[in-house]
Length: 162
Image (tube, helix red, strand yellow):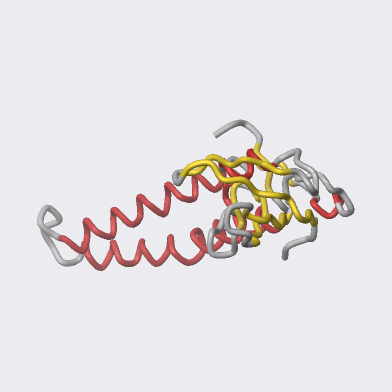
């Protein structure tokens, strides 16, 4: 992870909300679970205790990771790019797959915000790296596990995401 990385304001809020949830809900809950499991006696063979301690380790590690991401986050105001026809961070891009004539859309977001169900891809992904800097009308070749594919950039839009 580099020192600074791009994120949207919504991505930063999402990270902050997750930390708040982990610290205020999950951390006290797991402490209580550990206390209950500890009361069951011998800790060497206490599966509940070991599972709770493992979960506690995950929660604490996640909090540390999120704090590091927040500390390195560079919030990009994607609305400032409105009207831009070049693919940049925060762009929603519509592409035409030149092999099968199907349209596909992606939004280029920060690493933490990536969500394939929403078709939000990390700025560090091969697809995003291939698209950054391209203009509407450009044809781009994207290397994927299935081989090289050619896409035409049909549109580029920058809207705020809540």
